[in-house]
Picture 1 (cartoon, rainbow, N blue to C red):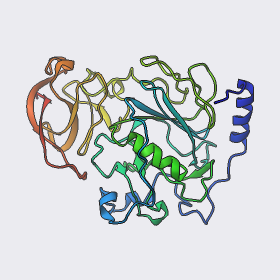
Picture 2: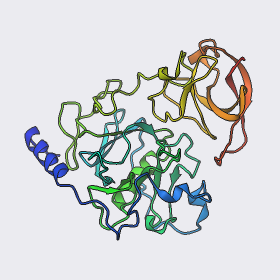
Picture 3: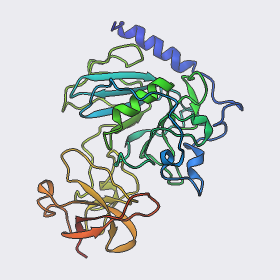
Length: 344
């Protein structure tokens, strides 16, 4: 694809940001909501949207998609882009998007930070191939993210356009809207990739050679292992403390993909509250959502014994023990697993 001079791209992007598509109006089914998908906060909201409806998908599942190895997604709120890429295979695709409407601060209500897709691709709560409820999703995929709203609900995700055609601007109540063909392609490219990292940043994304990323231009990818220059609104990813790392207080923990309700356990290791599932990270010990033996009413993410933590020897205040899964309000099945359990 053609690469235009940087100043020309910046001019085009600044024009797009300066004059975005107007916010949602009263004929938009999401009008008035600013914290993710509102129906997901209903008391009867099902945890498997896909299994609830026995209807054929309104689209054809692509059968010619490449197999990704280590995909990642960067969403730019100012650039109005969703960038899916895989540095291992060289795959890169930039999609237009409609993000959260502008709030009182003048910034989009879509939250920024390092997040992830669901930890279990078999859980229909996270990976919904045909979502029909509410009706305006029209049976297209809904890819839910780990970020939560102020009430603690996972209401944000990537989904279809809601309005036809897609309005590329500050138009949603927090989710990332995509054209129908685009959400189908993206969904099935990452469907079998649990905990795909998703970064939502305020700034226009820049590629490995400093060029702004936009639809229709080929982004230069960073080499595998190189640090990506994320926007200042989110900072770097990958150097954050993870589940099982030593800590002295809550400030020592968090910042990684899927980090929600993070805290420093009294035993001295980083963890987070959980229901059913926990995030994993390459190069780190696998995790398990277990009943906290020091507080059985809650679930905590615990490291599993393995070579990464020398069978729990490097996880402070723990010993290897079998533990039951903490299910909570999730749809996760009963399970047990060895974990690095708090010893007191």
